[in-house]
Length: 243
Image (cartoon, rainbow, N blue to C red; front, side, top):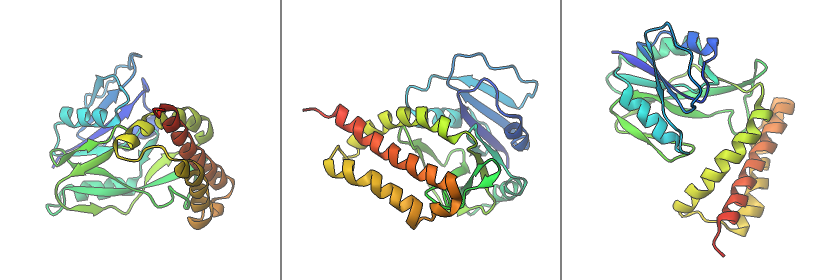
């Protein structure tokens, strides 16, 4: 069985640590949503495709699926990298015939310190699946809908968040605008209840009930930022509401 690694990015060049961690793949698909010319790679396995984002991350990932040639596809974000243990699990998993896809545990790290609690402390994402098993849905916070059984890998996919505050603010504004429109289409319109209750409830859930307090200051900051993100989505919904 062969495997493609797909990376959706707005960077002209990926971090060396990421490239090294995915070098085991039979091919690497880069879907670049910027007009900045990417540095030409000497690695013949790397295939680059420039495609405008147009506020639709699912479309970018589905484009990568179309361009991939391998039996399996693994999606990795440009601020993530694969552990050696996960690579070994992946190489073994794609030989199994009982599963069409696998959930992968993503572990956030801040200055090499893992964040073990809060909303992201136990997050598992469908990142590895057969190329023809399904497609992505939803423009933002996209979800890979596949047919067949889904297994689970134990080793982590590392997500570096060393600059999470400076990166979070502009992303929050961008994602919230898209999310507000999607929620409306999903039958979750603006309401005063969601505006006043959801943000504070998210902070309390992340910081206290999900143990974010145990992650120290990063846990506090992340709980606060996630609450602000929830509030920002409601603000965009209110702004877009027809009076």
